Amino acid sequence: MKIVTDSSIMLSCDQGKEHGLTIVPLSVSIGGETWLEYEEISKEDFLERVRNGGVPTSASPSYAMTLEAYSCDEEVLHIAMADGLSGAYEVACSARLQARYPERVTVLNSTTLCIPHRAIVYRAKELLQKGLCKEKILDKLQPMMKSTTSYLIPEDFDFLRRGGRLTPMAARIAGILKVVPLMVLTEDRKRIEKRAIARTVSSAARAIIKDMFSWGVGETYYISVSHADNPARAKKVADLIQLAFPKTRVGVFELGPAFITQGGPGCVAVQFVDLAESGINPALA
Image (cartoon, rainbow, N blue to C red; front, side):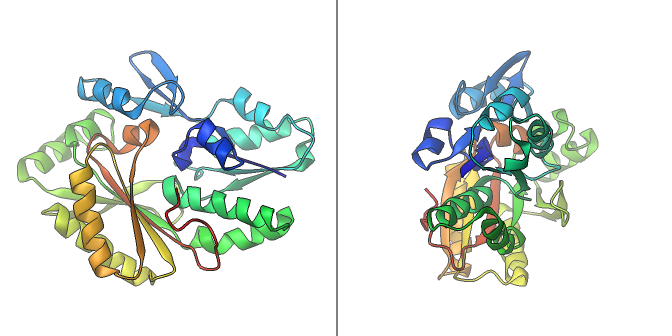
């Protein structure tokens, strides 16, 4: 069986091949130019363009590339980025109908993105290597998918305003008052909304920690802290989380262009996923 996913898992196509995966990349655009993330533009080059005033947009993997990924004689399991946060799932479902053998293609809405998405894909590969059939793999992925959520701590309010994610007034007030909005993935996993307003990054991290305790996050979980060229802030958040969850594994990652488009330069994303019963690499590398 072939496992297909998209660059939401923050790996290039070549890196995906090293793990036995087929990756169809998301794309990003600035000023009429478009690139496949991780393939045609680096996050460093992308960030430089954004900081020079470029207003980026992101798009789902192309229909043609998705259909090409289905051009095989074996079964396909496509684990797509959360429906609602991207059109990747819809593109995959449409392409499936035009596949050579549509009955052999299964499209799964991961309900998440980035590192939890990567963990779910790695788990599927692990189960496949153990000889499980597609139906049993899908069944075993469900607990992982239900165990995750995502938080976003943005930094560049003007970026969010220009991208339409904050009103001009809200962005101006946030900048003047130096407050830190905390965003969270909604319960239906289809969008990100404001959860709280904090005075400092530390207080935003403490709000996240409180929420994670309410979720029952414990030592079987993996917590990721991903950032858009803001390692100092990411380390500060990761250190506070590690202090609160001393037996839980915490990793720091760099966001790719598509998610920098959503959160803006300097943003920090915190996510968690339960790895209970999973034998995947605890570093999720």
